[in-house]
Length: 310
Image (tube, rainbow, N blue to C red; front, side, top):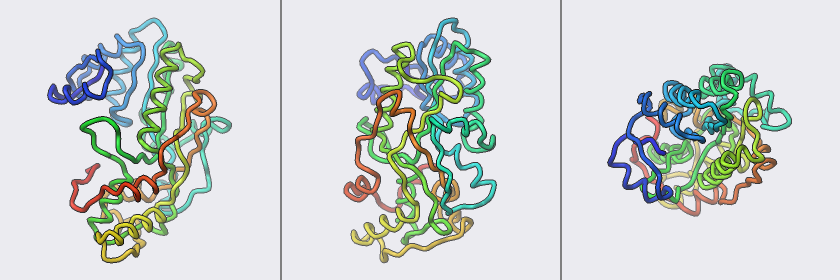
């Protein structure tokens, strides 16, 4: 069962989803539609929003009506790791702390509550005591890149927006020292993770862990330094005649925000994670090209495109 905002989207979605998929029409505020759909499902996957509380409350309200075990796979994100950067204003700096979801997973329960996505993560973690029949998984993707195989879809990622903003500016830029470190993952590898997670849920949980600190899953394919990415992109754009220089300007966080309003959180915040749980419990591992290979070999960027996030 898939929630659509309008009927027109249904035909294109049918091409990329299994035959027999049922569609319901509504939006994130359609409490009755979402709640009743969640109550009728054994497995709910939230790909809609990591931050919108009414959506999550509607899902939880519906799942609480069930009496048998059911599974909620929620998409959060590595933004949960950027709270300290925002508190300290250390944009564009490398972080030494690398979070993992296995040996030191309990560290994730001590993150600043005001960090991105934590408002929803906290609601889901509370289900352990409020509704233990709801088995939960919180998936934290990093910077996603790559084209989906699905039809009629847009590559909506901070990495692509960064490239677009560099082209729009006419010269590469980085936030502060450009040393912020993040993880990356191809969209197809992320999709493959969700397949494995859903299969585990369909098997009554499978080998996956659910609930509490065991609900957290990082998914990543190595690290990237934003300033180095800006240099590589600027060089490639210069060689294609899209920029007049391969040079990169290092801007203060405030100056970068004038160029692109997501610069602080998008390109200036370190968020370092290590995926362990997905390897150990689901046998998942990334297979696709890394971000440099994907972007530089499959160039698909131009100036003047609408901003993906504002």
